[in-house]
Image (tube, rainbow, N blue to C red):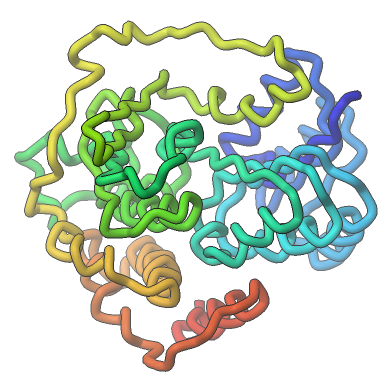
Length: 362
């Protein structure tokens, strides 16, 4: 039986990559969504002969899409978009689907949904497949949590870490966005350059695998071949690595239906350079000062950190603050909402985020 596959965020880099792969391998896509890039969305509709196409920047299209989620059984749903708002669609999906695979590359959605989202996925007999390479690399490794002493995910270092002469107080936007290994969207590029992405990924890992934040840290691996390391109490060390190609994670949900799909190993895995690691120890990056305190944040404060980062990025891009002031802005506003919120449902979490955004008119 051919699966019904839905891609939320088909116009992003991952969505484009997945659509091309599926077409090449004669895998049909049941539906796609886009947001701002309407020209590309319409082009995909025509090129791939798709009937179920939704523009989620249009309120009438949103209503139509919600009805679509309620009325069709989807076997694989990909969240390849950006931002917490897809939690609304995930909630509708989970209310109407069982025994489906939910593949998520949207870290904001996971942090915003937290353990409420993870429990609902489990309780509705659906399967979560994290697509970020660091979390995906752990999918077959995190079993006996009591045996875990430490988990490290890795960072490539972005555009600045391995160039120690650069003064981060004077870098230009074009340099911030110039990742040396791959092209990403503006938001992810900024997060990668200042290591905020690693904090968000640490939160994400803790939520997905129910591992204590204090047991999670990150190392720098310039070649980005090692994605995670587990140090176990019994002395065994698990090193998880694979070619730095997101198609590897993207095809994983398809394997239950298309088991012959295969990717050749491209990397010379005996290359010592590929296996080099180092501790993050560069005081130029403001985040270093706050690493310990950031791993002690409550779920509410983690969400606040994430949203403040989005606001700080917006202020940086509009030249209200400088690049090296992003961290300072986040940390100085982290207690903006002093009252503790229960956040016991997805709706409560979304309301909390909207309240936080409203404070900054974001």
